[in-house]
Every structure is written in structure tokens, then in C-alpha cells.
Amino acid sequence: MPVRVVLVVEDNEQNMELATYVLEEAGFEVRQAVDAQEARRELSRAVPDLVLMDMNLAGTDGLALVGDLRKNPAHDELPILALTAHAMRGDRERFLEGGCDGYIAKPIDVKTFVGEVEAALARGRQRRGPKP
Ligand code: MN
Image 1 (tube, protein in one colour):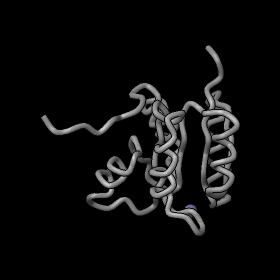
Image 2: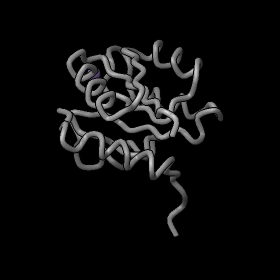
Image 3: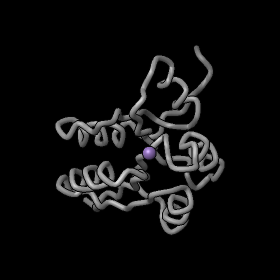
Image 4: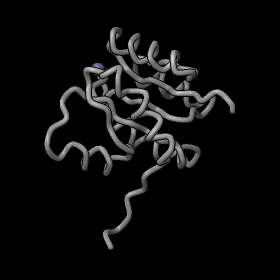
């Protein structure tokens, strides 16, 4: 099985280190971006298998960045999970409507983190359609 690549977009150094460590221990290749510019650069080099996107980047609304990335057809099948420290009622819907496929709450729980990433990879891109 080819090594799966996760792009972590996170401006907090400790969260970045922890996410990277846990994912690499689980056999993932991790690419890192600390801001929107780096995220765009990484995505233009190669599309990863999944993106973890901090919703509160310095100077950037992570969800707005996701919406912008979704305009590129090359990212049609790319699963994106929001990383957020402030998941409140309604946030899940807001993230999904904004182009994310789910979210992981911070602080990162090392016992469940990889499982959540694996589940998101298994589900793939969650398209929002009209309600039946
Ligand atoms: Mn942040």
C-alpha cells in the first residue's frame, strides 16, 4: 500500500508537532504548512490524501481558505478535516457547508486522533446534497 500523505495546516507549533508525531508513528507521511500561503504552495506541488485544516490561522479564516481551495477541481475528491478548539453548536454544519468533511476537536486526543483521520479517509469526500 502506498504511503498516505496528510497535509497539516496549523499555526500552533505544539499542535503541529503533536499531529505530525502521531501521524508519522502511524505510518503517514506528513507535510506541513503554517499559513494559507504555505498551504496553497503545498497543494500546488501535489494533492495529499487528506488535509487537516486549523480553522484559526494567523491572519486567515481557515474555513474561507477551504472554500477557496474547493474552487479548484483538482481538489474535488480531497477530504478536508477542520481542526478547531472551539467547536460549538452549529459549527459542524457550518464546517460541512463550508467544504470540510468533518472536524477534529483540539486539544488533540492522541488516543483517538489517528482513528478519526483513518475514518475520514475511508469515508472520502462528503458532498452536501439537497435533503431527500
Ligand atoms: Mn491556530
